[in-house]
Image 1 (spheres, one colour):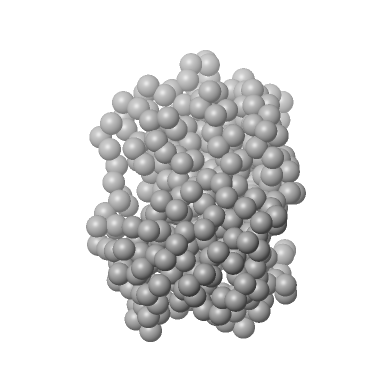
Image 2: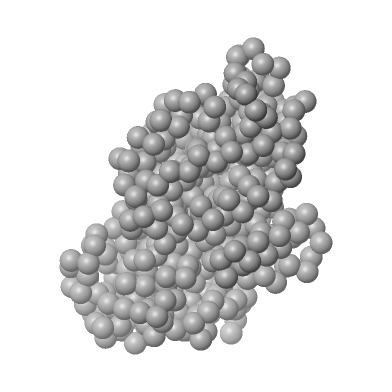
Amino acid sequence: MATPTFDPSALTRRGVLTTAAASLLLAACGRDGRADGSATPVDGPPEIVIGASLELSGRGAALGVLQERALRIAQDSISPDGLPVGNLRRTVRLDIRDNASDPRLAARQAAELAASPEVHVLVGGVLAEVSMAIVAVAEKQRIPFVSLAAGDTVVAPTTERTFVYKLTPDATDVAWRLGRLIRSQGTRRVTLVAEAGLHGDSGVRAVPEALRAAGVDLVRTVRLPEGTAGLTRAAEQAVTGAPDAVVVWGTAPDSGTAARALRRAGHDGLFFFDAGAVVEDTLSGRNAEAVEGAFAVHPISLTHSTLTNTTTAALARRDFVFRYIQRHGGLSGFAPYAADALRLVGDAARVAGSVDRGRLNAHLQNQVTEGIAGSYAFTPIRHGGMERDSLGEYTVHRGSWVRVS
């Protein structure tokens, strides 16, 4: 099996910092009278407060529950003395709320959290539509928001998303890697099946160009309906003309549901998934037969091959994996994003010497770091920070994700 080579230009983003950072830091600073820019003190030890609106029920629960687990594990891994911020040590407090996969409820929760001066950062929104609802609140209230959703419009255009950051890889990077993976399998005729909504929109924009660059023919594009009504018809349309493979661009549980429908419609070729499919639900018993042998592009956090390394990032990854498996019995590839969100916020506070929202934002948009899920390089003009070289290629073998490169 041939292994695709990376585009060297894609690696130049890491480490890029702008000289405008210093002026941004000064312009963003708050004026509330505290030496470190923090909110009015309350009884008890000083804190960094993370307000999280997560899909703990509803359509996004397969991903949202993983993020709650990750946040709590990351919180527990912090020293009991807290994080050094200015001349204080601050403990981390989580205010986690279930948005039930409802964008309107998520917006209300975000507004309530942002209205409290004790809350310093918002985290959440594993579904793109939910994240977009929080984006509007974050920009209005000028509070940093770290999105856990796939969907490039969450952070684009950056001029309108000055307080918003996305940890998942960009659609163009995933599609680029998928195109080369598809070509390496000798596949030449492909149908794209994209879920309804913003994440699907990102795939529809990114995949055609990536396939052209890889010399792969896109036979047709089919959008999945919201819910199960019309799913059979969409699957039948997708397999018309017997494509060699189907690219399923969607988050779990839609990914597994679509794969089953496509098999029932007669597709006996390969499946290629984007990173949103890589959770336990996709490999569950009802989907197992349909997805066996499928391929996916996902951050390399899905496997533990770097755990023997002794770098700071590798040690943090090893600690997270150990804690996660100890508590939950197995590690999902999607899980580390929220842990990285907390780490990014903590690093920004430490460097800023403050938990002031403006100062946190100024330092978030200049972070270059190796996280648990992958590498990030935020700049003032790029708030989708997952790096392309953090991605790997995987296949489903006997009900497990196995790295192929």
